[in-house]
Length: 415
Ligand code: PMP
Image (tube, rainbow, N blue to C red):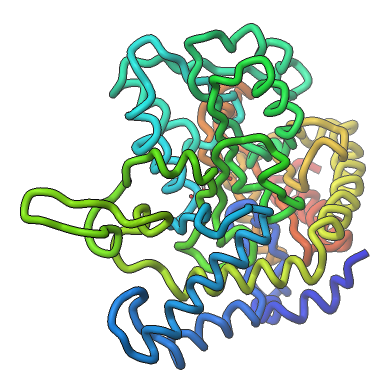
């Protein structure tokens, strides 16, 4: 079990009061809070080592380059990649997916080819493929949710024919919390349709589950630093070296060439060829420190803690649901879902719920469409409330949320 008291003491933001209440932060699917060690790493870089990387032969330049490359190697170990050069630093998951759509997609997709996405996808794993289809004449197919809120995997096999070139799916849904068993899914797909390329969006899984990319049988995997205790503006695209080597750069300019002539240029080796311009060096170092912090506590321990919170929160939400007070979306099996709870309070708009929880209780939750408007349409709601948990959250905070929801009902004179 995690020592949440000790963990919380590592996060300075938990000293804050919000509207006169101690902060209860339940918006982790949007972004996570940062431990002091990560904040210190950013300050240390700018205070003691700041210089541009790969350029200039001076001590600070060397230090910055070494720290940046050490961060890359550490993150490769963190996700079980075989080579640090398979780690491409990007700004976030959104940029990683756009990079793949541009660099891999434009070269591989032809008219009447097909891309499959699921009905769970965040806009960041939908819009790049919509655009790629418009650009190439390929078709976008959608794997639907079944009546239980799980993906209709049996239907996937019938969708995957010779024309399908790519299947892109979330590892964990940011709306319903569904955990997709990509290991099995990808292994089956690679067996039955070896020509299909697979991309997994790990934005919501990498912070919460042990990840070993080689065991996942996917070709591309991406995640964002800010959701896993790291800084904003840094993320990772991982792909097998053999695939990256065939891809054209997404951005061109400084730092990504081996030779430039007035009318032509040759690209640098991996991964520099995909990192044009000055990178977010401090961000990469901060993300590496965040990954160490997560590993110190153990990703499996974090998953176990969150599964305990999930079991408890499900119990509390179901009590309210039985009384007709809330509608909870998503699967009910804590083994199949992450600690993300999307719901509506009967008779109150999601934005009002979020505002009152913040004002009256200091509880931060999300409300809106969570960058997944097609799924909102499927659920037949304009918006939902989302409470999402992390390693520093506790059962007491779930109780506070449930009490907060009863308070919202009082404010709206529903009791
Ligand atoms: N995919 C999923 C599943 C997400 O939850 C998010 C962030 N909400 C993203 C992609 C996009 O992440 P970012 O904004 O860091 O690019």
